[in-house]
Length: 614
Image (cartoon, rainbow, N blue to C red; front, side, top):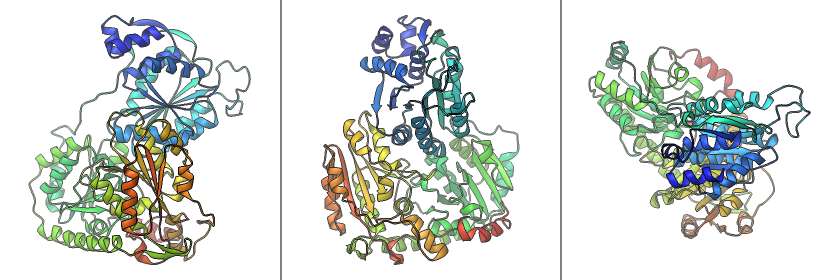
């Protein structure tokens, strides 16, 4: 095994070692080593791992290949944390990693964390130990039920799953795996179940036939189908077209900009697609949806034609289906057949977002819609003035802290401005910080902000910092998190130091789950069970971990900016604790502008849904 690992090191990879004759095409390998070689052939070199009795053989193979410099193993302290870190590795840094756990509770935790990857279309391998195939009796930590393959069935409910019951099935497993994690339009986690007793089992494997990374050409509808002509006719009749740019447009910002300018269409963003149009672009109406913005929701409500591009129709993004009350029809650009056909009265344009957008430009006349764009520009100016008033709000007296504190929008705005000035990536997880954050950020390109809105997973942002472990020249990242979200995965304080991560945690502390508190007040006029009476000294807590630089963010913008500079100068992980006001004064939050099918709003939203044309 070590000789094979050295052959890869000396030639550059599996394919190169095969071509040079340093690896035989057919070899007797254990399933564990065959899996590692197969993943290496797909470019998977980073393994986020918590080893246990269900993964000792795989762990030994990874040890040898790590000693020969072929893989990097990032040992972690929590399976949810490492699932998030792996998601960030693929999403932020563009490298497909693998998550390795033992059997049982660890696998269930990692699978729970994989919801973030599944919801955001991020490809990651998840490798879990599994019960033995011989049925000699219950295996410790298996599901205690007399049925076969229960973990494989559980993971198959979350996404695509493969149990390597037989080592010779490795080729098929990896072929299905790359089709999932490297899917061009809708990637996701792929779960590999490794029974404890098949991991060390030897079999003859043809290394030359193990699949590499999936690579398929960009696709668009074929000519002669008439679909672009029908789209052209719809656009010719439209007076107020809107492009809803979903997360699938992040890879095609130039094409979306050309399409918007060609059609004279307003563009409404999803929380995950900020930067697809530069923030100041006159046709960028900012985010729209249940939280949304004055300008984004205005464009949605007035649109008579909606061009969905790379959008899944998530409830909060389209106001639970009632966000476009005046729309008569839809043109939908999406590579996924379910998503492209989601709305009624739709012309489906399946395929690569950028390729289809360019075909649509070629098939249509350039349009000028000055009245529509002027109305949108007025609302954009109104939103800009409103946002400026919120970001410049003075500190307010907070009952929990017993003193004046910055409002959350003002504090988030200050940290976002600092990030932009220092070319730092911004990462948000679930909660009030995220909801205010995607309304505030002013991105000019995709990749400046990553916000986990797909699953709204508390603890994602801080765990995502660990995704940079071992990355060559990673961009500096700031995790924007609330006190509740931070306490979901605080072990990143240890793991980030252990693996040499340089980044910052901006911890906005309002002593409660403010997003739900606000929802309770909006629906029922009273809060319930969303706060606590326990004060936490987060600076002291973080400082207890050697290597972490923790500073207090102060109670004014000037103090916060000084704290951010001090934290940023630290060569490692830093944390800035920012107490923020929580209360009923509306200037302390960015507001909500759309509808959501929850709580006591359900009857109203569902009745309006029946009246929609799309």
